[in-house]
Length: 249
Ligand SMILES: [Zn+2]
Image 1 (cartoon, rainbow, N blue to C red):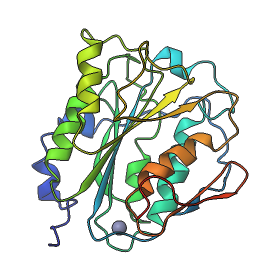
Image 2: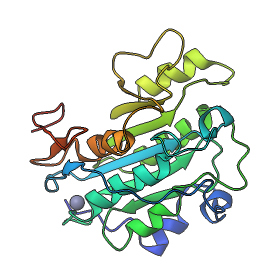
Image 3: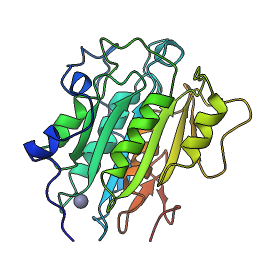
Image 4: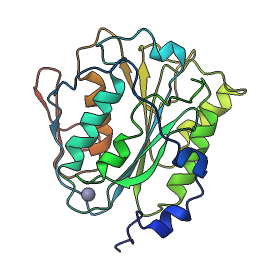
């Protein structure tokens, strides 16, 4: 079944996402770095079932500093490159992406990954100027659940980009809820250490360290964006073809 476009104004107005964060504009990105194209692989083509990929960004101080050219500091530019690579190849108009921040400001609701509309999604790919840089995952995780429940016919993937030094009142409970997300869950662990006690085995974990080569984070996001696409191929750090990854048909 073809769903009506989720981008109709009526759909946006009906969104339970609070307008306060839908329409607050993020400020300029901190520490802008030039986009450097890296090899990601082949996004393949859209599958029969449309996809929804919700990315959640942690902007706490332990993640945002120090500034630099490494994949952690450049996480927004690298995520943008992955989104663009898929948007160039979406032929169905039903593949959706959404950007959330821990602070729940400056997020972007589900938006079609098309060449034209991906620009709207990219507006959320920067540290929110009016965010407090909180280290609490719970609220944005709840938002990701709500978004996903609105798209029951989409295959959902949640990508959380964080150092997982969480200050939620109940960290164990939040991590359990993260593992129980109705879809694929990918923890992109910035700094590479992750939470004490590790993460639930249901969660795919990609550690990204500051000394990883440029593009490491772009490749991690690209892997989740393409996990349910037909014939996708993932490039390795030096452009090697990593075929038959998890999620390949
Ligand atoms: Zn598509």
